[in-house]
Image (cartoon, rainbow, N blue to C red; front, side, top):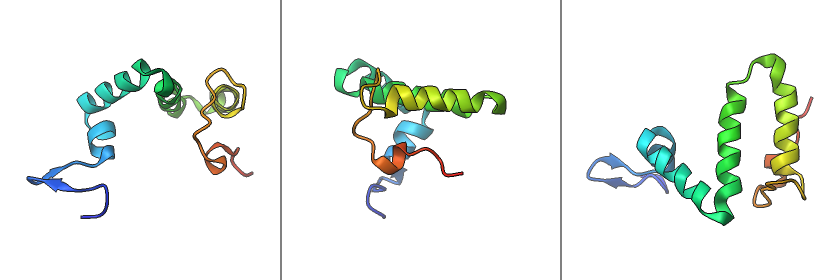
Length: 93
């Protein structure tokens, strides 16, 4: 199996399967992030990105600006300094 996708009795054990695709795993992981001070901003970012994905097209630009200022800007209220520059760069075009 590829790294991070080990099999245990035929059961998928990747992070994506356990913490994104499985509703109970996702809920528990999100609660862990939100309840751990050093990971709370990451949990909030995940929730906001999911909300952004549900936005109407007309709301996307304003929502993206709020995300950038809150999470991607040094000094922002919940700056996620662990993200790479490529992850936080505004889209080209």
